[in-house]
Image (cartoon, rainbow, N blue to C red; front, top):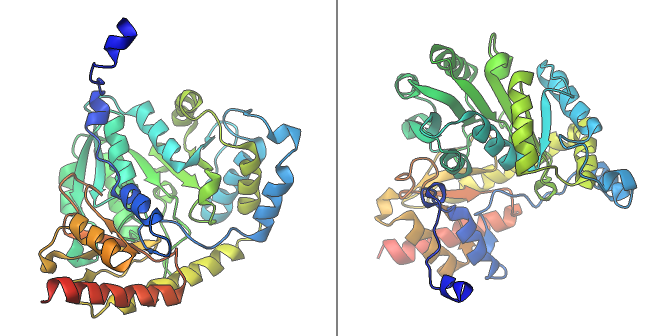
Length: 401
């Protein structure tokens, strides 16, 4: 009788879940999956494959007993050593592979592990507006209160130092990424120094999402906050092989930082993600230890694709795009068209088979109704040019009558 009656009781949803906003990219990807041949500009993926030696190493690991295991729980020692070596070689940062690095099931798990470890219900966490929706919603899942500092669209989506200092007051964590998603902003050294100063002034921890730190264009370099004087001891770095090494399906991430931070994060990780695939950790190790020229070649391809899509959209009425400085994407302001971004994106997919993402809640809950995101890493150049022409036709047919 109890089981029968239970079916009529509405499910009791937790408060933390009721406060999150579904990722708009997920809905657009699901809809695009139903339309064979659609031009996929909605999801931050790539059609470029990992380096051949990465694929070979992963294949060779399948069927080897020691990789068919979930131990050690904080990641295979050779991968933790490779992460440590990569940070020292690239940035001059030393992290103890045994006590200052935890391997996770992708960067998403690493971010949530850190937030669950250090954020109490009601704690303020500073984010940029806009930002990756997966960062803002994970803050809510952890019980934190997002506090947004607005990036200035008229300044190519860069920081407003005065607004940053104002919003950061009382924030326990400063949580940001560079290149910033979804704008492609690569924060300058001066901007990074200001972030560090604000963290010290407020005794805040920095949680730095560095999953795209090798994908910067036009000669730029990503500045890690931990490389600045006095900042290593208050910074945690989230990394992964997904974007930098074209290994999105491997789901290998990590978090690195001072041992007094990382040990409690490891405890949360054990009860949250446990450990990613042992086979895929072998591939990630090969990516980090092997030749890095592959990464540079892929960045050059992505930069060309960026320029092709921007050129194709440059004279399209009603779209104002800011050239991204890094990453897989950029966003365009469509406010002149007098239509919300969800309506624009749905109609574009239905009429022209081109999938782009509305930016609703990519930052504050009220952000994004005037903005859409274009990803330029999933399609070859000729398809990007075609997308530009289809978007031009779509706007002419729907908004210029």
